[in-house]
View: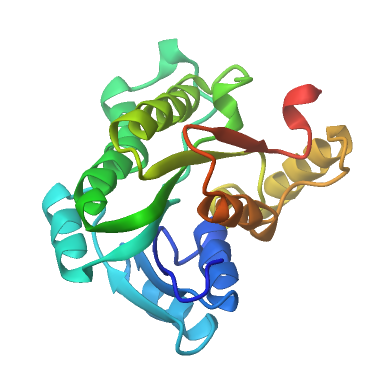
Length: 240
């Protein structure tokens, strides 16, 4: 059902966004990936199905740049927003620099909202928007207050936009722990230890991969009777 559809994946140069772009292109969609770093975009396009994917380097924290992106893009069918830097975790609220913490909303929340605002006038009938939350909103451990706040805001926004933008469908994918380069700021030994400990607790016995998540995004794009919903893809993590 995605054959010949035109899809914009913001945050599509790596991780979950890259996996979504790859899966959609393999189904015959025409995909535009967007990220902030030109070299990252170029490298991603080179690794994606030839002839199906183009890329643009855009600062998604800039509302003006985002508006210009969609004005130039023209009509399309689906918007996927996976852009985001590593979320802060560890410091408790009492020990956190609130000015620095506020910055994390710029790309993950305000960037997403700016993309929706700029993109929706250009979307074809039957189109959809898929945003990205996180399970920290459902079951936040200590030290995840700001991550939980951002992810919870995305889920609430999804429900409101599904009413406001109808008949455009709006949904959100809520990932659990996924092995992507968002963890690259943590030393490799520590990162692998976290993954092993998490995998041992999960009912599925492993942490997620970007391709595990991609299918949920594609399902929302295909599913013409689904809107205002958030699906958790976490290997059962919110159950244990």
